[in-house]
Image 1 (spheres, rainbow, N blue to C red):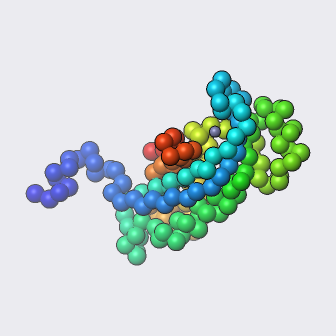
Image 2 (image 1 turned 180 degrees about the vertical axis):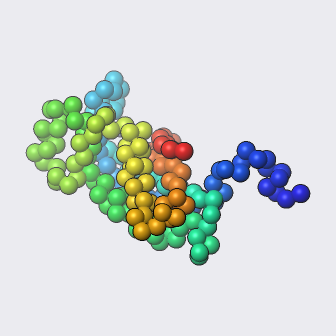
Image 3 (image 1 turned 120 degrees about the vertical axis):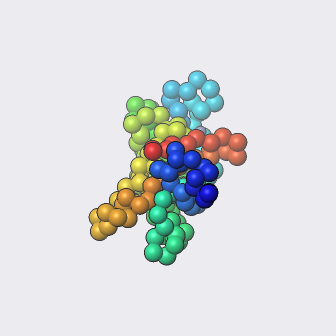
Length: 162
Ligand SMILES: [Zn+2]
């Protein structure tokens, strides 16, 4: 009996391979709905984990080359580096930050820029990079398993879309 029989049928449709890369970048934000310390303007040295999965390796026997994964995510991380996130409803902070922040380092968000919301936003920005107009096969093969954002060593949010 092979290993696949031992782990059971329910696992057959799940991705079998995954690779993950981590990135770090500092960012600032304020949570206008928050009643605690996060209502203040503050920053984090964040760690971002991105995991890509597949049930079928490519011709090079890889999920994706780490170099290619790095290239895709790093383009986004460079935009987020030293950026400030502000809720579109946060009028006073919006006005203040707008007057001093480099415009390409300011992101106006639909919701409070919590770790959870930023995870979802980053997930969608990355997932769209895996839609390959030249290869339906490639688009179907790779799946962004999850995005995790560590706002400190002990505090992590995750977004996944199965
Ligand atoms: Zn914070």
